[in-house]
Image (cartoon, rainbow, N blue to C red; front, top):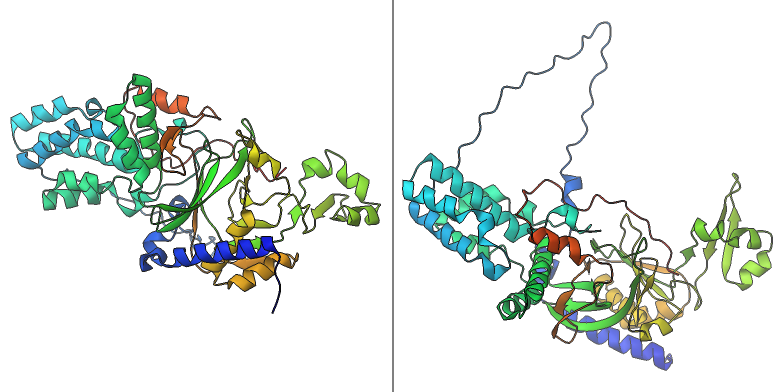
Length: 459
């Protein structure tokens, strides 16, 4: 029988217990509906079409003439359905929205005139606005600073289909309720809104209710969620926190952690770290080590020099590796991921916005084992051996596991208490300003157009 040290055994047992708890989640956890967030805007692009090159014997293909498409008439509204819409508009305050944004007076006037083209067009337009804001959020995209978490809801539930279904069933209210976030934090904010004691407090609650609408309505049966202002990570099953971890997030400014919705594709035990050129060349690490292989080996680096003179430095697995003993592989254009760290002291600080963007996790080894057991069918024994081997081991996930990196300044903490958190990146101001202005028309923009900053330095 193998003997395990206390730390290894503790992490193994903890990971196994959590994995068994997670495995008891309903079967729909692996359904397509919960297959994780996908940037559908990329998939929506048409496949490139090849055009034959004209030759002497083959004339250029004729350009087809497209006839103008007649506008689709608005669907028919009965006065009863229009009246139900008016009631819904007047009640949007409970969802943190403003009735005036949806022109109740214009709808009332159209209802008085009776059924016909004017009522059809007015009601369809205003219902469409309400659907968009319930489903996707009221805040215009430019005010969502560093928001790269693409919400798939409008692809799953297109506006026109919602309108058609609601009118067919004569259920305007039900169609709207079906769009609201299912997360209990949204319900907690909604319950707190009428109890707000100041306008500022109410505005902050509205802004954070809207942030939930920026995400997928249903986050899935099991997922990881980091709230950056709280500086905490939670492992969640059926919207209940199974385990929480302190985290270190990005420093304010250029290295602030962006908001993402990604998917864990693998668990890496004992990772290597490719040192960025800002350190290799900028800080002279490469020049110091390239001609001193023994020193590089003592310090845990492998150094190579390319034909063009570029020096590459890769830190090898070990206790001193900047990524610690584990990394969750979640490919994204920002090079953001969750990982361990050899510098544990930072987890004891009340303010942990200290990294170059990536998220350092306290108790990361236990998390890695849990993810390996749950998502890659590892046994607790296999997960423990992968960790203690000190050999780079990448375990591909066989089950989908979403990761959400969010930004809520009013939310329930990991103990379930609704509270406010310091706005460490000053991202509330543009959201609050947008709520103080009239509603803006939605555009096709799905995420921030800001510069993508590749934050690949865990130091």
